Length: 562
Picture (cartoon, rainbow, N blue to C red):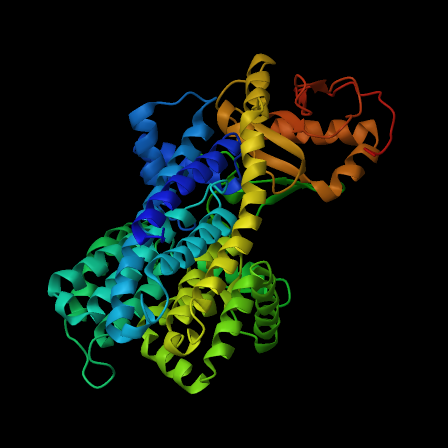
């Protein structure tokens, strides 16, 4: 019995549902720093605290969806992170629907441009769907993942839909003013999801103007795309610009460029006096973060507060260094999916006509150009798998679509055999990860961050109070969010040993300085804190020291934390 495209679609949908839910459930108690900030912003929107809600670094749409989830279900503190990952699962389903929207139109496009590429003479329809679904699952479950509490899954859905609409425009019988306008609305939603889509949207808009007639005669209906984009994006741009006192669509890219490319190699100059953390103590260094925001960890809540006014200076040496690093990261990402490279090369070599292959790929320029632009843009600043997952998937699919399948299939079904080999190889790697997720999901899980929060509230702290953290890393302070506490000061992980080796007098002095700033406790995840004033927070591995107005008695031995 032969395979059918419909059967493949139904089977993969069930597989995607199972794998996606297993991954979301396995990570139900896991929150990253990004997620804490999005939850803080969601709460600000929920209480109509616009000063805290409108943020120059974190885009709004994900927080709006979290606000909606909180309003609809009112999850308790214990289940808050689970509902966040439930939202990720819903966005995964939306991404799946967006992908199918895109891929159906892609097959229509291939049938029109290269009729021999589908079915009898080329690659069977079911094989095309296997290729597409494999790319989708690798993109969403391995590169983006449902464990990440970020809007990348939502952006995946939007990029797939936008690319599908571009294909609609290429199929002239479907191109209308309404289609162009809807593309603009989708791109506007993309900008609200991640600010990188603001510049990339103009690539889509320009592409939509030339997709039907080529470079000879631009289609003025692209102005409808621009109008739709501005209609959705400009209200937030205006609100953000008013909040920051300057014209801006967001400072995420600027801050990323400063942190990843220019700093610390080049000294930055500022157009204004930028805000800086206050250093309370030199050795060990103790930092205090005073901002106008009500947030769990003010230092990470809005990067534009600290760096938004800095003037970036282009230095060729720094940029070339970042491009080199980006190329290495792209090789690392692609090497994990090397079967795609090998499979495409085998098929291209079998075709034996590089000129025809190139001609066909160029003819599909509108399919891969926006995604390639995204890859180049990220390559100038920062490349991470979840950022580039969808652009890579779209480019790969375009490359396979451009192959001369009639030449490849001189030996019957050889093309389908290669596609199946790619799917099996990629699926094996995916299955390994997902089996681990199933195993984790079936085991009873400890919600350590909630246990820490609950323990702190039972040990004398109250919501609304300030605390400091000893040994701060990039691990999220989700416990503080759940307890309603604010981490307004910290001692970096690198200075932790210096703190333990300091004299009791020095540690008492640091505690007094923190208390004078309104900080009521010092929290750490150190294995065995020094002194009797440190109390374990249950069996979580976290410890608490309450601070007071008088010098503390801390006769403990002076030793390192090792």
